[in-house]
Amino acid sequence: GENVEQHPSTLSVQEGDSAVIKCTYSDSASNYFPWYKQELGKGPQLIIDIRSNVGEKKDQRIAVTLNKTAKHFSLHITETQPEDSAVYFCAATSTYSSASKIIFGSGTRLSIRP
Amino acid sequence: KAGVTQTPRYLIKTRGQQVTLSCSPISGHRSVSWYQQTPGQGLQFLFEYFSETQRNKGNFPGRFSGRQFSNSRSEMNVSTLELGDSALYLCASSLDGGNNQPQHFGDGTRLSIL
Image (tube, rainbow over all chains, first blue to last red; front, side, top):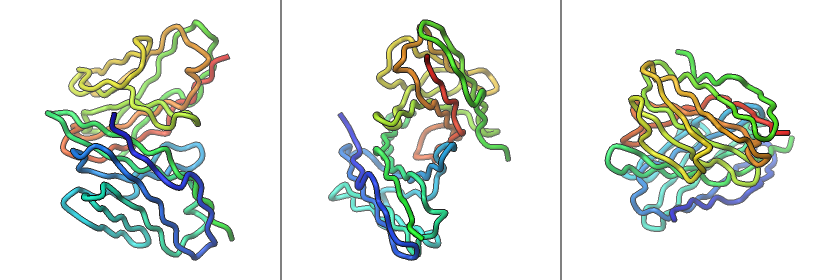
């Protein structure tokens, strides 16, 4: 069946450095790719998303890139700060008829070292 | 605008009991989806409701059921609880669930089965 693979499962970076999380999807019909940040005791919060007709999108220190041919998409966080520590999930969404199907990656626990 | 509200935040039940969880979507959102989150399995899709109808369903046994009311509020029911049902249950809402709309999550109900 369709799946989304996410790497790495854990990532530790020095404050101020960049962090990159990568995802690969299998369903070629996927056309919407949101990224979520989940802090302890909270639900996932949407931080950025990209649609299949766009190759890159940036919002301040966060950027997402999409390679449809390779079925890869990545999250880039620059100038990391302690508040960036959280679990990050990628997801791939496909639309069939009137319903959407969303599959999440397994998550990346990002730790920012002071 | 208020976010997605889930009640209760915590629940403790014993095996064999049943439980009902509640979700109030963002005002104006008509699609409500439910997810189960566990450390081992990640975020797994349970079902989606739109206009009081189940539109999409994941691979969970029939013990897991749900419904949606005319005001778009949704409830999820789990009968004959098992130890393995211990998890964080998340609800997410979107405008109509289609055409690549972002989902907005609540903070979940943490269910513990003793």
